[in-house]
Image (cartoon, rainbow over the protein chains, first blue to last red):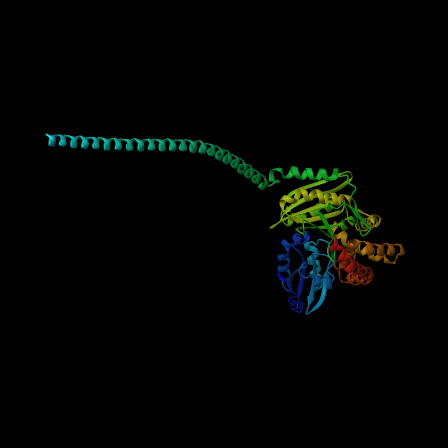
Length: 104
Length: 338
């Protein structure tokens, strides 16, 4: 999973066809819990490009996108937000996959 | 005859001169030897004095060396002792048990109030950081450790099934080093430490309040104590609402896993928005408890597209209030001041 570190990079990436961004942070325990299975999720949904954003690095973007909690996912298609799974709770693999499936 | 006499006199004078010269030489030699003796004696005395002095110095030197040795050895022992991990694999379990027992023995009255809705004890070394839009977090040791504090689990089941679900999720992320569930003074929960590839995940769940942190191994017992004290003293003033939600959830979704039940709870509260009393309660909650309302607003997408749109519309007001509340500069300043 590639990391977005600048706003310019973010604006460039969201214009791609199918993009899912995972908002995370190094200190976030629940983010660490989902980390091990994320490569398999990426593999399963290979039609999406997966990116991560460290919310501490791009706090203003998080505020702009109403990222209330982490880990959270926001999906984009050609610059448009097509879905979001944002809350403070931990997400299970099934919940994440369910969210991605609901985007289709 | 006279010449003979003269010759004899000359001889005598010569002999006398010779003798006198010899005597002079002897005298000079004697004087020289005396001087040499004197010098020798002086040198000997000096040497004796120096020897005495040096032996005294040697003694002082030995004492100093001994003292330095003692200091160096002492410091080395001290440093070695300090370098030794206080918590080792052998002592870890016992230390964790002590921390858990100590946390339940805590009878302090130092209660903090967060946003007038939640009372809890925050250990002095922790800084409560307002959520600023993202999770409630507690910072510790100049931001080295950030503890994620999440009271949302008050609204889900507090039973072994929930505990096991969380435990298994954590276990899947790494290697479980420690786990202990407890039921003390009517409060139930567990403490779990999982070794992740880089650090350790410590989770404390007590009476539905979930606290977790990414930490170092050494910190586990200390943080366990503090997280338990914080978790077990958390009292949500809106407990009645949470309880009510829990009852409804249990009635309607029996047999579902706790994770699923979390999503159901959202729908339940949204469906009942038409009820004035419920609406009032919901609004109060949105003003006072960012955590719960955020979950309710955002959990819906999991349930499907149709519920997503309805939930987003239905909860836009409370969401807006929440955004204003969380992102206001006043609160941000408050957070920074804290």
